Length: 610
Image 1: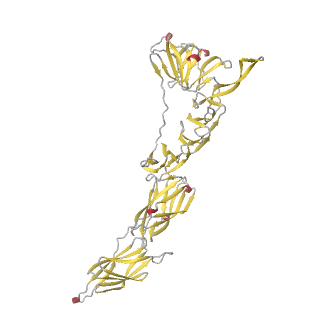
Image 2: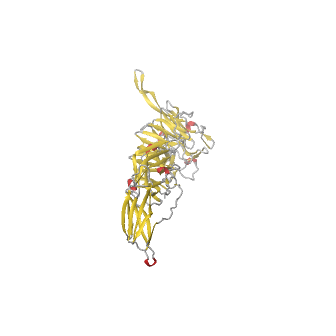
């Protein structure tokens, strides 16, 4: 009579059949989180403290300084609110400390492999206008010099200059004096990354250093503007050739070359932090304006009859590939995440911002962090240790266990099931364990037998809610195969069956399989028929006397119902075959009581649904 039952356990996954989990890789404790410009790194800010993270959530560095954008794999740091350089980070998180330097040209970035900095020094200067008792009055004065630092933070042998601009397209425009102390004989030179000596000539006419009045940085086309002996030239960094600047494109007469008047301090003006103008002449009256940005890169030339605009490429906003989408709540007040149409985190965040790869920046309770969809990791839930669940009575006491990968701490994981589903978890029985091979969470629970659970294998579902480290996962239906196990059987004692004038009398015997601790026969017995009168008398806990009348000739149906509190009734159908007496043939009345047999239940082997 005992029937086999097999538990079907589903591997829970947040994308169908992939067994994925979502977890924090950067905790939500920061005021800001954003991508580091120029490197595959993340920066978080809180309370004037910045942290540098890898994309997989490894904290590489913490600093009280401001981290500028990465260029050429390095990010300069400055004291917050100042231009004082404290050092720079590499893309691997290594920090190189620097002292006494300041940001040059509002450009705190490596360029051409080098960092241009200002080195400020305090020196004493004689005030020639104040002579006291034969002595000049001394006062302190801050003076800046510009120099280049290499990738190790060391000063190079390029020298120091009164003014310089970073290496662009391999060239740096540098300005200094032959006599820096007296500020006499100013001149410009080009320094190259290869420290190549750059000389200037035109049609085999070489120019001396003091002939060079002005040199700009090179633009994206590799062209700079040079003023030599008051004449304006284009300088091609690739060919190292000077070319005269004319107002008309077809002009070749050198007499019509654009020129300047006065000293460079007079014709070169700084209009704003991002605009410098070199004012020149075409002929006697026509003005020509050469426009430069904050790094002295030529951007345009305004002639009287035309404007020349040089190529300028805006830095593209990076785009990131991701399979994650934002999942909003119906009231649009909270946000969650979905992947390929499947919800992986239901709406629970204040906001979701940047998403890249399998990661997302999310705001929880006003603080920002990063979650990651962890491919290849899975969790598994099971009941009753994977053994059969056979409901003998109204309640079935068992366990529910959640197996976790090692990246999920069991102490931060919880399971919950809505009690209305028929599963009551004992929260005080919470048990956890972390091992090198995996972690788990386990609870004791009590299952209530469904009202209509039959005695054949049936699928039951329990809505499992998993939460981990403050993240709430989607409700997942745990599918369990269960049945009503009838631990008793009903038989008719044939030797005590009698028939008289259409009334049959018989004895019902109950056979019960009891387990230690079970109550003695916690059930009641009832009998039901279509139209017959019944009389049921209890002889003992396991024996009942029953009468049915008046029998109809042929087959009469009745059923014995075993009723246990809180459980579906167990129904045992019988049929009574009655043959009336035939006096002429001296045939006595006859009766035969038989139990109706059900179709055999097909039993399937145990398995795991994945």
